[in-house]
Image (cartoon, rainbow, N blue to C red; front, side, top):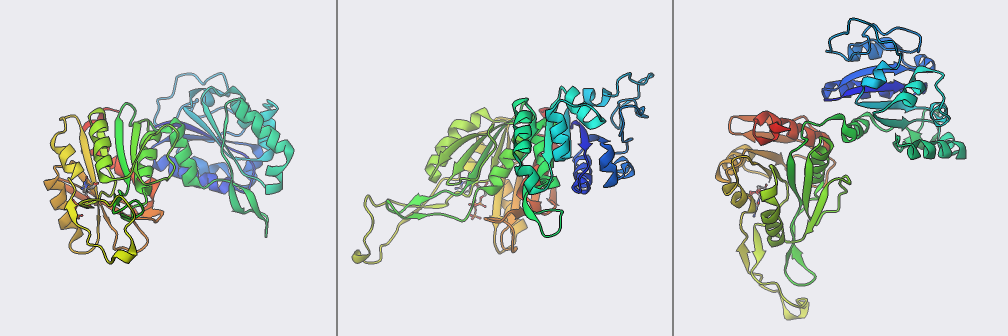
Length: 412
Ligand code: CTP
């Protein structure tokens, strides 16, 4: 978990910074907040102080009762000389919301209040989350200032589009949502508990050719697999994802291998599995494949064809059966009907898995193409329903449980 300094400047979106700080603390980060004087018109320091459990600073001239420390740290005997001790000790500095005015001050190298002074003095990763009226965001002055910040290595996040604070106005300029900001913080190195762990993810759904234009497929979109890959990468893992017919974007540091059929997926897994510490087998693999695919398109005029099917090998069971003791293997099961928990337990055992993530796709609005998911994490001695939420959040909860399992990824 990281020491996160949050700089709040004076815009209506300061209320969203409260939620971001709350989520960051919940995620286990240690957070300190500094505010510009103007931001106090929107959110008082007592709010941030209550959430972080630490004093909030507004002026370069006030002394820090916590002496530049983060919650839980032992206070030094002497107060630090510099008002910049906080930013010196931070792992990541997040400025949210960053107003047009604050961005212009940072671009000019100004240090006339604590937040811009801290940006100027930062030697850690700086994330700037702008929030302003859309015309201010599009103004050439702001465009140039943002470009300057980016040239200097500051990460300026794109604001969201939609309704703005001023009544009836809409456009680009909203502060990105607190959960997205938390994900950005994590990928900026805010969390590193999977550092050193090599993770192999499979995602999407395989397609088995009937002829050159038709195939047997399934409804898996690859979203959950992509979320797992991104979540693991953001926590420092070295991630390879084998994508079966999925084009859901993954972060730039994830290595992508594209495959189409179950046989190709099996070959790619055989190649990659020996080099991983943790396998997350989220792909939906065809259980039955056409015995022989036709070389040419089957013509309707030739009548209804009979398509012979053969069982395809169980890739996951094969890999789990031959794994080394230091490898962790997690399966994913989308169940529909019957007794999902009993089916999942049978799979956990028969495939020799460390855990299985059960997704009951008969529940409306979750699974397959949906943005949200609700899963049960099943291991030898527990069944835990994880909180329903966006797939990235669920992916992080799955990784948290894998850590608790105490198998190989603990080494991170
Ligand atoms: N799996 C696999 N190879 C297959 C079938 C499934 O590796 N040929 C993997 C999936 O990637 C998943 C897990 O096994 O991680 C469970 O998949 P699921 O389709 O739920 O189980 P099946 O064993 O195929 O059983 P059924 O479809 O009858 O429920």
